[in-house]
Length: 367
Ligand SMILES: Cc1cc2nc3c(=O)[nH]c(=O)nc-3n(C[C@H](O)[C@H](O)[C@H](O)COP(=O)(O)O)c2cc1C
Image (cartoon, rainbow, N blue to C red; front, side, top):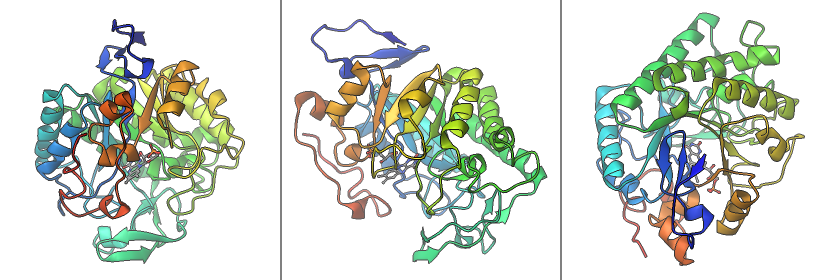
């Protein structure tokens, strides 16, 4: 990482930085946030370009999680990147962000067992093993109980890797600056990683090396398309939602090995949800985030419940290279300016988080 030349009175967090040739205007990243405004075909609306462009003041935007294929879908009205219409819609988003001087990565998603037959014409969602998540999932007409997913056949897994490869190539066509592989929040990749959700006895389960095989195959495929310098990976070693997913039996060993392997692949960054997403920053399951970070030599994006003071502290003591914020960006399109000026932050009511239209999405005023 190199700090760019800037006026000396600018605080570190607001200073531009260049990471492997990627020039970022500051060190605040907009965290990926599902907002469920796409149509039934997974095409983002025209006003998604407004929403993202309004937030282009972030050093880097990571888009909402985006399905790599029809099979990847878990929730209604989430976007995709496998059809031409989806790629065209995303192109208008990236162009709008670039016009405002921003940088934007697409988050690549497969939900695995965190899905419902309603999303798949009545067929069961797929997972490493047939283990039912606990609780309920949001579907078109409310909430429904999770069902038991179908365990993937071994020969289906390379085809999913291919879906990631195609999605990554489509992201390039759509004009993104890079991609983030969603390996967090108990979706498909993390379902393979944790021994609580992977009971397989083939090459994709059992030993730690086997459990990491599919996620690392995915990252390698995406790196083939983009080059390692434009690929990030998101992790959440101790997050237990959704699906009340138990932790791995040795989270520290598992994620240390994963980060070591990602480091060897030379990817741009790891984006770490420290604690339980949106809930707490407490360490659990024997995980020490400061030690985990040492396993990875690329950039480290810290996330989860950061405010300005905490973010500046993490940057100052070197425990993060960049800090991402999610919820604060929902109602504060000009979040960077507000932080810089110590201005008031607006709070978005939860009813606007998922679904609906431009209201509560691309209509938040600047200061
Ligand atoms: C409405 C909403 C949608 C989210 N969708 C995603 C998503 O699509 N992909 C993802 O990796 N994380 C998602 N998250 C998690 C956020 O990226 C982030 O980790 C979390 O909000 C904690 O950061 P914060 O305290 O700065 O909000 C979502 C969070 C919220 C509030």
